[in-house]
Length: 300
Picture 1 (cartoon, helix red, strand yellow):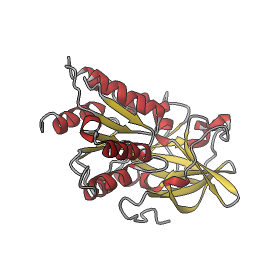
Picture 2: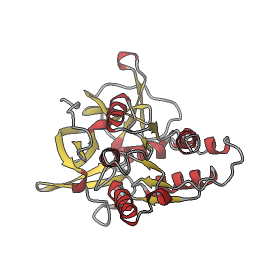
Picture 3: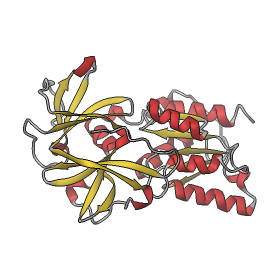
Picture 4: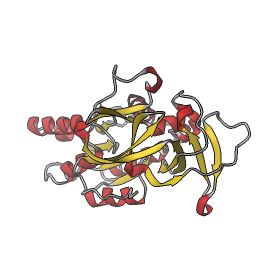
């Protein structure tokens, strides 16, 4: 199956791979996928997390295999099915699934934020829901699944402590991040680094609304001198936000930092084409502060 369908930059669309697990429909952003392969035997790792099936090494690359059924508390997968091999947050991980249905192109505006419609077993590990024909496709939060298994793969908050004592910095920064946990962690980390003038929003649309309101009131410089944005967000993704900001003469000089688990070579090229000033993978929270320093302090 071709998982390299190319999307035009900044269209606010994504490709979702639908797959089946225990008879239920789930989805993953195609941008996270390296390849889909038939199940193969893995080598168990002693004392590993119960959801880790083991490791295997196709083409000299060490890959960790995760039993997705076990992660969702639906039992233990039997040998067979498929591995969805992914790369995000600089990690190569294979997720064991039963079967693959196909790829759907959707707009981020079609993604429904999870709420009471999501059952307890998926609560907290879903980023959105797509209503497609006669079924709901639950888009899983693969970053959270991996971080729950190994917290060391998440934001490395210790990097902030290494920055040492910092002075108060009043430069206004606008943040677009849909994960409540990550939104709070980014805000807390920037606060520790001295940045106290922050506006945090839940998606690109909210962030763009803030920008438009500031333009209308003539207060853009007072409220937005730097933007930090995720890529994957409902309503409007970070690439669309970047395109809108960089194609507007009034806002094109505002530095934009894309801070996402999806920052790989392909996505970097997209971000560069859209005009992003910097792009970082999410574990690099300490480096995020250094990059923001360079963009907003060294250019004053």
